[in-house]
Length: 437
Ligand code: AMP
Ligand code: GLY
Image (cartoon, rainbow, N blue to C red; front, side):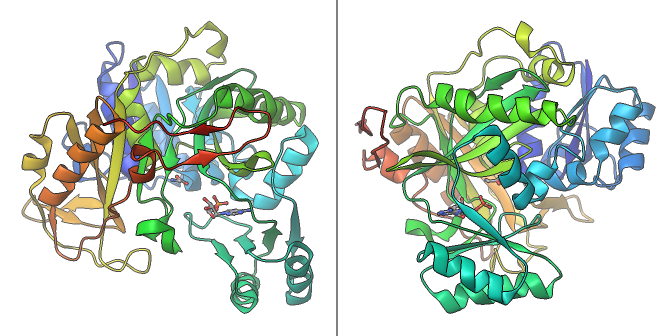
């Protein structure tokens, strides 16, 4: 099987790496890729969000499958163009990608499908925004309705700040979704969908804020770990039964079947499991950790989803180890990041047992040296017999990365490793983490 992976980031590097480990995958190409991806497979300088260009490349390379990584190409209709060229594609159509591209649309589908989520109001002007904020009270949650690379959400106790964020979205010609605040730990579950059937991957936890202890502004994600020893038993089944399958059924019923990965962002609140958001692609950096543990060959799995054959897939096989991904970001991220700096030490990082480096915002300079080229520069991914060991290895690796101004969180997976995460979800037995020495 020949596969083309679309996208430039860490998620795509992790996907390429896993595809190369699939014995049935003979060749992988990527577009546009990054410095890490280009060391593994041929890369092609194509605009990932240009549907015709991507379809033409896929046809020219005579690939058997196209995997679309990021949300922007999906929202731009890249999957539709590839499908129209007669090539199987893992990734939803432009219409189905609205589940991520419009938070208001996602809320509408969730309501139709009876999916538990935060109560929400759509606001188009300052008066409506103020009204919605006062309906739900503090803490205030204000979301840009459109795609914002994980940075369009403001959660604050300050009403003026909430109003100002809403106003900035209105000024840019958009609308906002204002919703009730959800308490409790957050979980990311990736559900493979073939338009009809669903297969869930092992849950992960992401760290959205830039600084330790969940302080500072939201980012695309600063680290992740998996599996979640503390999650209530039955969580994955609940996500399938109450969230993913009803959503997939509703999308099929609407005539816009969902093919690809439905990324269910959940809060395990004191009142039950609630959907915080849908995304229509793998999470970044959760994918880096999740795929590190997946033993079932990835190519066959994604092809089955693309072809409507997930019902034929055997139960997924997972490593018993824990995986941690720690992101190293550029100075000033999530503001406009400093770029163009040399990155050194990566060979030493990869010499640590169980550790590999996944590139995100990197490129090769004129001399062929790896330099930073984006906000999230790379992730150090480590496997270990438990979360404690995986964290140790990941942070040993991070300490060896040399990047001027580089920043990372020191607490990825820390609370879980110390047994400090508590869930009080009604219906599920209260669970706490078991600290592993
Ligand atoms: P989203 O882009 O919708 O995933 O939101 C980004 C982040 O904002 C989430 O991962 C949460 O940490 C936070 N967030 C979003 N919606 C809510 C909510 N209703 N209550 C509490 N936190 C939220
Ligand atoms: N890490 C969260 C996301 O990919 O949106």
